[in-house]
Length: 232
Image (cartoon, rainbow, N blue to C red; front, top):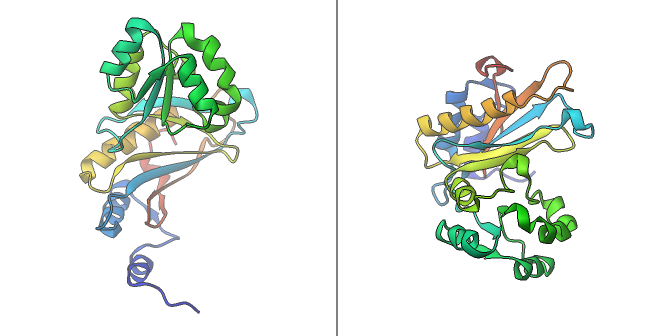
């Protein structure tokens, strides 16, 4: 049997797989166990009582994390003229039209968010099979199809995260970095979980929030006590 590393031994001693942790307790432990060599991402995963194969049970949305994500978000924008210039000034990593479409068709998809003005959707629509599977297709409900791309770029760069339930009924997102203060991580946790709870679809029956867990990039998964989550 392979020997546990020093880090793995510490994790095994301090993290209890069967315990339900309070949110603050989980945050404190994940920060304590985080690597000193890299700034790990703190993540939340929620197991929901929905079947996303049914349209009335889809959970999808966007939430602004009050303390940001600590991540450099790469944003591409489809726009022309003044709106393209405004998006560039707002910090977009790539702005274009047909040239950007061709670039993406050639496999250049290293973006976290794709934004488009309404008049560009005829161009963007040709990328459905490319952007769709990656969850990058601009969508007016998520604010990524907008007449004000500059504001959307600023929101994305400022800590706005998208979430979408997966086939197994799980929705997850990074809510900050291990270097964040505990209060800041808690504020982001409450904002994300609160948004998902409020997004409960009309078709969801029975218990909506079944499980919640927190983890870090290289850390253990900690089960959260649902009694601390309002609306769960």
